Length: 364
Image (tube, rainbow, N blue to C red; front, side, top):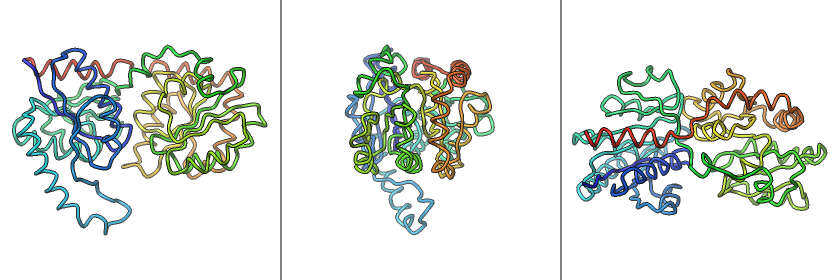
């Protein structure tokens, strides 16, 4: 008999890519399973999920706006509307289970499933759980987490440590350093720094690199720079005529970027960290300070305390980031220590662990 599963959530690559990885793992184990994604209209998932070959329904929903309270006036109406949309989706699709990966759309979907007695599963990627996941956790069937110590957010008997699902293209990549560098049209003999600010870019990282772009050339280094859309044009103008810099808004094949990189500058989103642990790269974290509960700093410190990464405050990035990156790129001993310590933190099969447990519960 074929199972029907809804996967809800999104908003950023950090929610979407693990959700797709879980869906792929479920389909591999039980190919007859029908999977429907539910996301937020106008968000990244509406584009990325169909590209991965899955159907998605969009809800009219927005999150709570922390910076502008006036923008929250329409929230109750949007929530009511999204619950009505969810009700319709459930009555048509008739799911056996709902999996929430975080993001605006997971709350109404899992809340509705719980009110109907349908099995609900949560994947919490961060080491500091989000508010809606904490609320949903009380009635969830199982909660999959990335790190230990999550009992302070969820009922201990429901928690399973699975790690964070990493895209198989990255987890099972066989791209060599040389091929990775050639993909970006760069020089295979030079030490390469990769700067990524998450799927939407990172203002402080971009501004620091723009300000000190010449330091890379002066130190015989080259740069792969993922800028995010808002900064792309500016970055391309800055990089024009610099043969040692590749700049673009988005890297579609991250496995090439990770293979090419000797050193990485990155935000500290949970998925970025999961990927860096799997590919074992020396990394300089610049946590996004306005993430809910400052969870990116918590994520990064988890590694820094194990001497498995370095950290630069967002507010100090402009002055310190490029110098620190250049210093790390020239210090092979420090790179070796960071690589050695990040290695045991990588989990390459988290998607399979989550999928297997969900199917085990449904087949009982």
